[in-house]
Image (cartoon, rainbow, N blue to C red; front, side, top):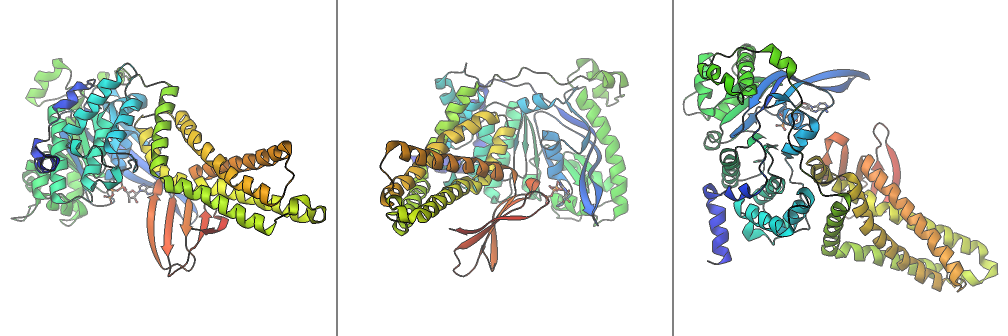
Length: 567
Ligand SMILES: Nc1ncnc2c1ncn2[C@@H]1O[C@H](COP(=O)(O)OP(=O)(O)OP(=O)(O)O)[C@@H](O)[C@H]1O
């Protein structure tokens, strides 16, 4: 069968996406996730006063293993917030209990058994699908697993997720649905028990949505994982595929249960779905309050009681003694068990040591730099060109005692230029890297120290080459004394300046919000947005301007640190 035929078959036989290959990976335990009186509060400001705003209002619920659950609700009702709190992504501001089976959630254990796939596909654009998976396998799996097994697990996963025919495609060339599947496959390497997905179907066509939901359903049913995702407004066909829906309205739950029971449940509470209406649309309309706010209050109260009962069932579902009780549907809350609940414990995966992580991260960076040679060559060429320009202006000053002041200006200007390019090389690029780093770090791929070392190992030689591309021609053309010691001092001093300002660039890029805009702005296109850190990189295009202003906004203050930047 030709590659094209295989590709066609994989893309169109979504229902046949198999997940059996995943069983080769170390099996994690099945985990029921439940929560009790979950509240999330943020600080907002009204007339210079700090005001607390409650986003989740003490909600209860349970998500079972082997089920695919959708958190639904109108925009701004708190779906992503709930997912963030459950995944442990947002901790400060939250209160209430989260349980893993019958034990309290422990942050470290949670990171070990779960993964969080965000709405945007933060994958490494310059790696191929297979390379991305291989690096992830080397970083996430213990060193006791041989390279051959890792490679075969990667192939199995690619096959299972329908991406094997695209294994050698650069990830930035993948379609939205394929990128989403790759994001899932990257996290499936460690076989997590719980998968959180924030709006996985956003931006996908109906066929890709169906493929993705089928894949999630297979992962839940065949592998007994707990799959939780947020959804906006699915089609009726897609809606029915979920095992459970958890509906939020203004931070409160109004329904948890199977999609098929939505209409009878609401009818019992005097909210009648119009004939031929999509039940998912109906749910959202009820949650928005189109059927009256009184109904919503009633639904909050009724659902809270049902959810508490469900949650308690979920907490004890692994306890065989309680099964007769569960079958009868008469569950009595055992407060003694509540008090005795201990943090969840399971065997932690042995992560590769520091040097192995650094090695794989370094090689990943090398591959990415190789694929983006233009950027590296441009940096070196700009240094060389500016060296020619500056040294032409100051030619011969090094050997002329009458032009000492000019020589000083040359050294000063050189210093400023190298400090500036060292800073700019990373201050703009690092924030773009930030979200991928955050995703990988949060999902436990590596610790920050090996990451930092691997970045420096590729950045320092590059910056050194840039400095030398400037220093050597400039030194010669300005006719500085040809003595090794003097050249050494000159070079060491300038390289040190450049590397120091590069570290300042990393610091600013990693900690400060950054804005890039053209003057006399016209249309704006945001290329990157991350609200948590209030970080915005924005390009505002005007007719033919090529000058940008870079504004750094460290938290409360706005500082125009660099004013002119030529792209
Ligand atoms: N850090 C914060 N500070 C202030 N308000 C916040 C913060 N985080 C979330 N919110 C508010 O909480 C509410 C819920 O946000 P959330 O992102 O969870 O909504 P959502 O249901 O996922 O919406 P959408 O479907 O549009 O993504 C919104 O009104 C949002 O403005």
